[in-house]
Length: 128
Image (cartoon, rainbow, N blue to C red; front, top):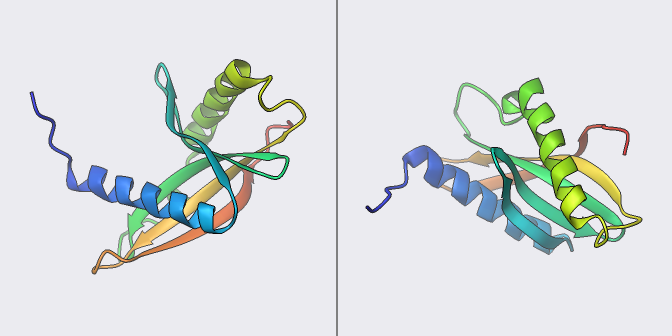
């Protein structure tokens, strides 16, 4: 059975693509995209120098009612933390000695579908 992408799913996917392109331009190495373990997911895992960035991407219409930052709830932060712990458990040897940082990529989509990406570092601190 063929799956059809919803408008929301399409915008989210485009926001993640724009974020990956933005990160690459800034010199980040993309380590994983849409990494899953059970019900937990990390949108983007990226590396820059000796810092591993766990990045949540929130994409919204520029004229929408909520901002990407408002969409990052406490529940989402807890889920992201669990996902990151699992990820680090799986790949601990690969990232030994790395600082782990939680970032938010806010993506605003204009009516013409151009995207503005803003990366906010250290949106949550888990004492790593």
